Length: 488
Image 1 (tube, rainbow, N blue to C red):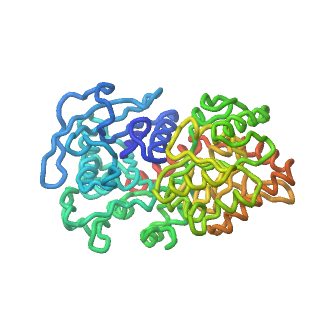
Image 2 (image 1 turned 30 degrees about the vertical axis):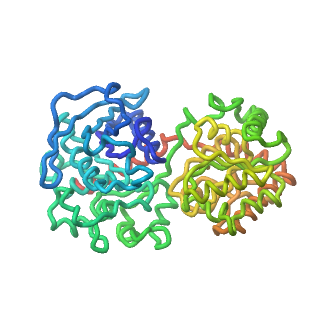
């Protein structure tokens, strides 16, 4: 099967979050299954042309009432045969930032920039004489591709091509003034027919939800949640109407990178049969974060973006957040790695100064993130909503028991502890509040001190979980086949 991935991000070229990891990992997994997978994305300023192959001849793209000439460069996903095609247009992509920069978090010409990407996907296929069976678009920035397929392109060489659209986070929709709609290159009749109209504005994601042949999202529970008003960000009605076309497929984990048995970024590698060596990572983490070295006290780790989605207001809010109580009243240590909202960064700095058993690093450090996963006993992830989540899966593989909220991919991957039988792989809270975070963290600490045999069994059970992309890739192929069957 020939599959074109249309995306604004893919590792190692450009990344703001899990979207980039998922696109590359899924492409690699599908390629290993024998499929012809190719990726198209913008060539942002920081992607070095000198490391890419230039495809001769400029490419004309016609979004809206204009003709834009672009260059095309070609690279490869590392250690693979998966080509990545980069659309080169300085005016659109020759700048810092993917969607925006700190002073302008959402570029005002994003509708033009990502409409160009959608049109370029079809022009590229014609240029290289390769017509895909599936166009798989990811999140709002790639949403125009399945819409163009349905309304502009399916009457020609793409008549047997089907579309699949994946929602990685429905909270990001690409909503702009409708006066920018002509840049999509669609007729005004399509403003309503394709689903763009959103309270007299233009909504890219909504258009893809209406127009794509099949829809997927990144976990089974999230697929159900986004069909409810509290999680659907106003799109729940459309998703309920199209519920038969919505499939939740759990993201996988790149176990070449996240594997405690061969991780070069941790203090000591270990596995199920050598789990005692995990203590060496705990010692290294305590030293690195300036905490007292003590193997007998539970260590709670957290790696997060400091934004509302992650439950940081309930945990770190200066008025009612539970972190201060947790560290003051429960005998444990806590380490946090993250960055985000200024108020939360300031609160972490204040907790650093006032609590001897709390240590935070503001920013991001890849090596430290691996050491936190390996050296912690518990991993705290009290998300308000979590489409899939990766850190809870990393934690399980590293024998670090997650403390999570019962939502999205967290609900699909973490089994709640049963204190009678010792079964489970983590500790789950249902309601997001400072008190519930405090109570569930306290419950985990109680089990640490009073049920050590349960903790040991849970860690070993967690490390035996399977989260490879091979299973997910097969489920995507099922969706692709269903989409092709529907159009043919």
